[in-house]
Length: 506
Image 1 (cartoon, rainbow, N blue to C red):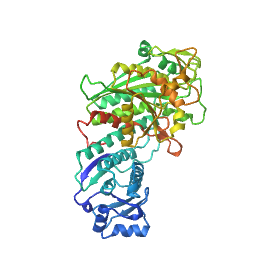
Image 2: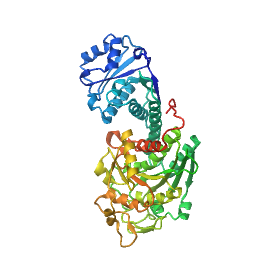
Image 3: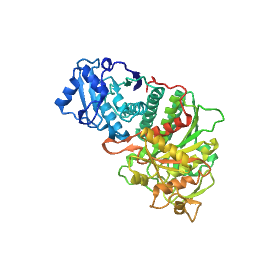
């Protein structure tokens, strides 16, 4: 999907397959839409009256070959009450427009949203959200389909404006396009079945990513190296499978050589059966999504490599399977982590924290400016927050605020959860330094508290994306979250990109 910005001097003369114009509640056009209506001899308002179009959010009206306009079609897009058009409503409207454009067969579209900019959404935010959603709309899963649906014809979206786009607006569109490409990579990896997307496949994809972008450098640690590093917690998870585990390290070097990097650590359980603590059979197929934290790290590095910000980033992926067998770790076993902490494994289905604690300890060798792990960690987080917000735990107030702000800016939102020492009491063990579960109460919190034991000297945050990483039901599939949140967080740390690729293809 190509996403660009353009200054339009005469909107009526804009040549495109479809011109998208916002309409407010009760079918009242804004100033610019009204001017275009006059150029069409009132054709837009006549059609709205005849179709009883009221401009509600999630509704639209398509006109073919409108008189007096250069565009082949006009899509009148309902935006509701401008005073109540928050980001959620704006995204709903834009998603509807993109769906209608895909259905119409239009090959390109110009979104002329100046009337919304005067209603409280600046051009920068409008361009960012349009680019994010347009990029996402281009994604189709085809890898294992013998007869996939035809690819959408819509290949170009223009954020048009009668005002000359500012540098910030151009950059916002470029960032949205790059972030959408990264999120689509994460979605593709998440959607692949576990017999294809193995730890070795994730390693191959990381190497391919580094091959596409000269700023990225990849190395992969095998189980022999993990044993040398004494990663007993991570290796205990992979003990029941024949598929070798991988620790993937992907470095982006865009800042000064001695500048401390921001480090992302992703949980990459490519299939989670629960191990000996076997999960129920219902919906176990969805456990292929248990590597979405790892996918989000690779997707974020894709976006960062495209935008080339002035900072250093390290992505670490701990990738393995969790399967039962005669060699699998058992409940009651005690293992020793890379940090030297002994862990009593009371439940082998609480495996994500075991691979993460070793990966987080390994990450400290990079002396991170910030350390963030991303994991589909607990069902308890789904119960607490559902699918709309990722759970955010942090031991640093400034870092927490920065991540929350990045989520709000991209609408990839998170919600702050407690990380109080009071909860550590639940992780006590009679036979090891710590237990890997803390009982049924506050499961997402005690999981985060377990990880906190291995990050006390770091500016650290944990994102539990168990509820946000994939959709269930008819829309089943990976979402690509939280690539947008992470990419915006990193871009804000850099300040600006070196080469805003406004016209780059996604």
